[in-house]
Image (cartoon, rainbow, N blue to C red; front, side, top):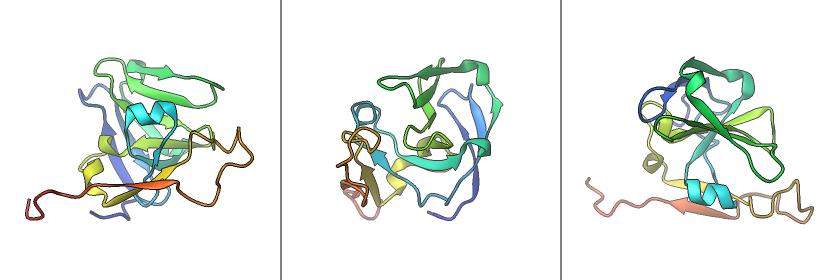
Length: 146
């Protein structure tokens, strides 16, 4: 997998929502979060500046989910339900983009994905760790030849 890709096209499962994104640091920004919502969602997100995600089709098919402080905005396709991206609470000038929606990318392509501490969000808890991930998610193939 090429971690240095700069741009990619993306779509939801049914193809109603399509977009083009310029990534901040390729796929090197991949991460998961352990907050209550992200634990259930289970997506690997990569980073883009808000102005660098351009909708190509289906903007009218996007629904938004917000909770708690209502700062973050989580977007998903109203037809197939797939989460495509979210405006970050930690930095509202950035989007987290679902890596699985990017053409040719699977979350299982990443050997290791850092997990951010969303349970103790830095905006809520001054003692929250800002030094790095609270853990790592790893995918290890059962059959290395597959």
